[in-house]
Length: 431
Image 1 (cartoon, rainbow, N blue to C red):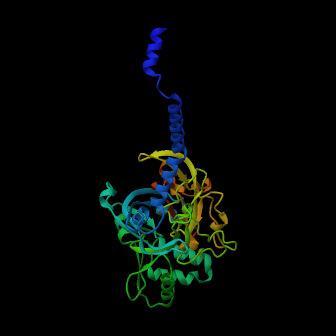
Image 2: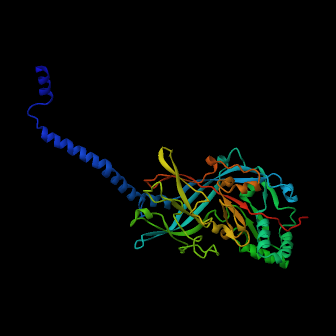
Image 3: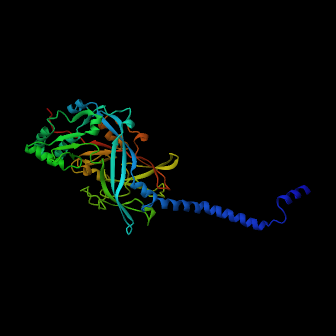
């Protein structure tokens, strides 16, 4: 008993003010708890706000007025049975060839701030460069058989919109395309990438001149000479080294949750693309330009992204958490059958409605094509029976972003679409 008392006296001397130290200890615990549950999160919030708002000189503003690097991968669909398709005895058999890899850069140019409205305006510039090294072992010398997109698009458009002039247009197309033997063309992949399909409009026949005049007005063809007699369809012609649109977005100074949200595109608050859109559900411009999203997201929050190339706004929904490149991220997934996407937007008076999980691209591109996720991933199973070669897999074909919910960082984009010509029976007897 005496020994215990001696030990206690050494550990807790009698002259120590236990009440004083108890108060200090409790105060430290309270301060620590306060900092853990409020102080540190508040500090993180302040830092994120400082870095992400789009005021001149801030981190994210500097980042986006410089060139942002991306990797773009192009896959081509090789048609393996063109003769059987032409004879109408087999459905298309497709072989995926790729990826052909491009380095892509986006940049916000000609910027302008409106402090009163708390907005930031810019021209979105885009460029692609084919990277032979990253495309290896593919070289571009692979021979592929493709649908002649221009030839088929023109005939389908006339057949559906103006069938009474179809014979005249076919006569003109025979001259313009030098009496084509089928709707398919065989070429090297690198020629498709670099040269595309050239259209000779140097004709004096009235029918050819009328058809060429219409083709010059399309959104997908590029005029190559001053006389406007040589046109071209190439995958990147309308996208490469060009201004895509002028955006006005929120800077987020007044409301951090509005950072990047689009106010106008080309000075319009809505699109003027979908003619049948009486309730303005299809022409809505919603979300950001995909290059950044507001911070402090919840898992349940639906993130919206606007694509000017597709003339659509898309919802991205939370699917799961995953560590990507050392960061804990939320995967926000795109499903073209999402309940917030009005399927009436995928209908037109000529071609009815596209299968669920696909998009009608006619209003945007002015040609009858379907858009979908790669290999018709998440699309209605009925469309898979129309073509052989599609093999949708989640880990290869899902589309969305890995996103840091607290910060502003999109850790990894995985945005993929496939464009498919909506081919029905063509009233054209090839010689």
